[in-house]
Structures are given as C-alpha cells and as structure tokens.
Length: 457
Image 1 (tube, rainbow, N blue to C red):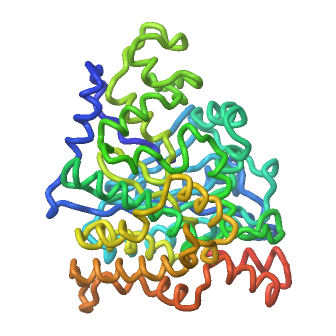
Image 2 (image 1 turned 180 degrees about the vertical axis):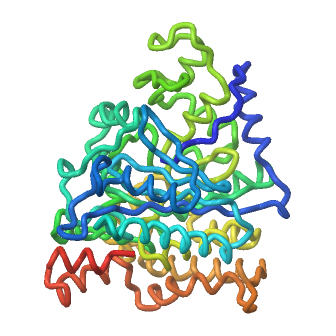
C-alpha cells in the first residue's frame, strides 16, 4: 500500500486516456528495471506486542529518527510523519504499523538486494535503542487483531470502515500481514499481456514457494500461508486472480474496463480524503458520484485508484507481482531474482506459461485456495503431481532466464546467485513455514519470546 507518485491533475477526456497511460508505460528492453517492495512487523522486544504510532518508542519515533539520521525527507499528514522519501525510494507505514520499503528501480538484483540490506541496517540502528525489533514473516505470529494499533492515515480510516462490508478477513489483511513484491517493465501492450498472464498463472506456485505465515496468535494455524488465506476473502471485487487475464482478448483495455467497475476507496483533494466507497470509478468518471458533486475525474485520481486494486498481479505503467509472504532477508532478495528470471527473458515467459496454460479458471481458483493450507504439497490440477514439482520446474526456468540475461557483479556472479535460498528450500521440499513449524515445536519450545528472536532481521 505504498503511496502513489501522483501524475498530472489532467481531466480524463475518455477511457482511451486510461488505456493510453498504460501504453505510455512501455519501455525499450535496455531501459527495463526492477523494483522491490518489502514489509516487516515492528514488535516490542520484551513481549512481542505490536508497536503503536505515538510515544517515545513508537513508529512515529522510528520514522523521525530515520529522517534525522539518514537524510530521509519527511512526508506528513495532519501533522504526523507517515512516509519518508530519498533518492527515488520511499518508506511508508501500513495500517498496523508494518514498515514498507518501496525501492529504487534498478537494472539488476545485484543492486536491489544491497538496497534492502542498507534499509534493514538503518532501521535496526534506530530501532534497537527504542526496544523495537522487526520481523520477516508473512503474518503477525502473536498479535490478535484487536491488539494491533492503527496508524494515523486518513485512507486507512476509510478502508477500515469498508472492509467488513466486502469480506471477512480484510481487517486482518490490513493490520496483520506482510508481503514482498516486485515491479517489472514491459515494452508494449503485447509484451505486458504475455508477462501479466504468465505471472497471474504461476502466482499460486510462488505463494507456496515463499510461504512463511504458519504461526497465528501464538499457535500453529495448520496453514502454510495464513497471509494468502486472508487475501482469499478480503474483497473479491478487487483482489485474487483476475479471470480476464486468461481470456484470449486480454489487454490494457480489458484491465481498464475491470478497474473502472471496482468501487473506489477515496478521492484525494489537497489534504483531505473524500470517502468514495461503494461508488465505482466509472460512475465517478461519468459525473454521477453523489459523494463528490462537481469534482472532475483526473489522471491523478485514476493513478490513486489503481493503487487500491489488489489482484495477485497488478497492472499500471509497470507490472507488480504480489503473491508472496515476506520473509528472511535472503528470501526477500530471491523474490525479485525469481521473477526477473521468468519475466525478462522471452523463452522463460513462454516456458513458465506452458507449465500452467492448460488449467481452467476454476482449477486456478481451487489451487489458490489449496496452497494457503497445503503449500508445496497441494495437488496440481488434474492430479498431475504436487505444487513442489511445478515449483522446481519454475525455479529451473528462472535460473535459465537469468543465465541468458547474464548480468554479473564485480565478483563475476550472475543473478542466479540470489536464487540459492530457493534452491536449497526446493531441494528439501520445505518452505519457510515448514522450518518455522519444526523450530516452534522443537528448539523454540513454543516460546513466543524465542520465536521473536528467531524471526528478527
């Protein structure tokens, strides 16, 4: 839920303007970049409780110390720091105080992973004196929903009131989940369509590969990814798999038509948020929105609306892949490497799509449910093996794609080196959730304090 970089406040003349904005996002291959976003939970080191915004040991204090110590520019709302900006990167707070880094667009994983390392070191340096620790995991392992303090952002107030009307787990998604995401470029509409369909098709496999959210409220949930399970009933109008992606005529126009009919959350005018819940963007564009009489829809409004849509793969002027639990540092670096191998090599895109091309949409939906609980051991559609088999094949394709791209660091290693944590996991057939479960029942002795120590960056 990073803050959008607003485009021009130009009135939208027609739907063609919205399609044109996506077409304008196309870039030649030489200009393709990758961006990584990752979230983490702040907890009190003494008891693992969530950290509030206010107070000497709060999230606001952490943001302030980051700004003063590391030259981040403060972004304030109603007198409170809600985000930081520096050299193209942003740090934002999620609804429950999760901290998100939205990184710079880099050419290679050799650059994006050191950025994550630098960010984590900065956060650790300012947080430890405050008694705050940061966890790399997909769902808060200890807190109940009511234990989590809400952050002071107007958009979250609107979303908090709306979520219970459209699903059963939206509030949990907001305050108790963390993810790691990657952003990728495309050259034109045809290229975007191929990449989007491929990414949407293999998303459930990636969810299983990165599952890390097994402990919920201090107990084994029985699930591999409780984070993904929350998303399965957050808001079906705006999240999950997008059926249109698998239709032969899918393209920018189809995505725009879908997005137009998703209810808005809010409209931003100066420093105020207008509650637009229940009104689609199409209704607003046509001048029929009762909440905002006289307001004219602009490209900046559309850009904000696109950031409030949460399908497993999101399309803007780039492609955002969203299906993975946050995890350990090495896994947060493996995620962009996996997707870069798959999406920035033409043969890899085709090979990855062939793994999943024959499934019906109902089978895709059933698998998306199944991997939440069974992860790598979930059955593939048609009884053709288990997800682990597909995950190993997908990882091999990513290796081959990165190998052909051939971007090397100063030591001569290409980007395949960042896949090593996944290589080790898939060789063992074990997700992070499997390892956390084993440690929870074994060496950690179901001790919450030891669990916090084990998950801390």
